[in-house]
Length: 472
Image 1 (cartoon, rainbow, N blue to C red):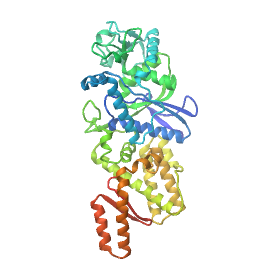
Image 2 (image 1 turned 90 degrees about the vertical axis):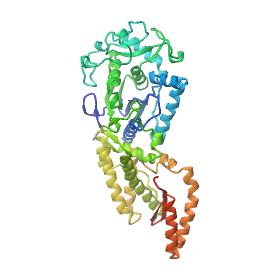
Image 3 (image 1 turned 30 degrees about the vertical axis):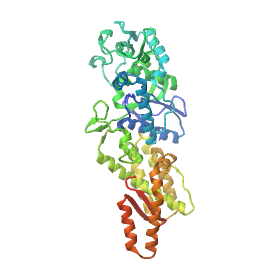
Image 4 (image 1 turned 120 degrees about the horizontal axis):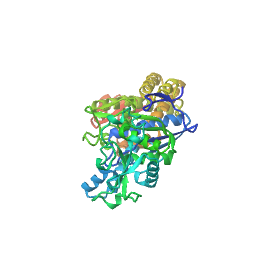
């Protein structure tokens, strides 16, 4: 079965049909860096990280481009509010985005261009659109440049709308537009804005509009026709609708397939900075392990809304703890017998689920079934069957970016505090073992209770006691 993905443009599942056989080019819209990323933002990063991993397991060479919008009205406003240069605000939040990538195990994009880095390409694209009769400089001399939506009959195709039913584009005053629905490709320099936030053009100094940058970046790094364009469902209109219009009006085929992930809601509303209901990634990972937060974001289908609650987050953490516990116990059992297990094949059922529109919930059900089988085998110690299950489970977890024994998670699972704590805990466990050997069970129980009171979980296994800090 080949990979089939739901195409927002045609509203049906379609086979992935790469422009270049064996290679897949993906563009997804990154963050406008007026603030640090919340878990709603990072859901999209996790979704496309899983897609990338699945494609690479299938043998594709994958190129991922995710932009950084490092200049816009909100970033300029934040700079004024904070008394700092706009680019300092943007860079600080770009670093926070990269930290969120890292903490949740998302591999960085192949290329991560900034809007300010493709200004020459945007100017060329505007010149082409003006020459073709699809764009025009503002008639009020503001230096704005607008896309003429009525010049492009297919405008509205992605969001299934008619131009006459659309509201006015709110990106600039209507007095310079031929039609209030025309959207800004470029914004002329305004009095009070820093000179550093503008670039020279044939129509005067100015800065990029939001939509133009993505068309310019996609063409530069992936070519004028590429395989998948993605992002949050809230970007379908107007952002992605405008991208399609301006790119195709310039004579570029643009994306073959459109892939949108649903939102992550808090109290029934889309999580966003504007409504003040954000949950920063840096704060959430203080309450649950980062790997458990990734599991929470991965486990739902990417086109399903996630209703974020602390209860559901904790439930996900408990569910993943069971999976991780099996992997670690099985790995210890195999190693104690002189063996070593590396990720193997994911199995037919898991693969079929992933090929069906990246069906992670069904794939996770397969994974959980393997874990149940593995725990049964584990009771009898090391065996070829246990090793086979462990190899399969680790392969499945690798696709989801959740293998606790992988280089990334192994490097982050032990903190400096844990390293300092280890000798103390090991010494107490040795005392407990000595007491049990001497049948001094009162002392053994007292040591166990002391550790439990300090937040240390103890699990007795055939290979000896295992310990962990509660909640990690």
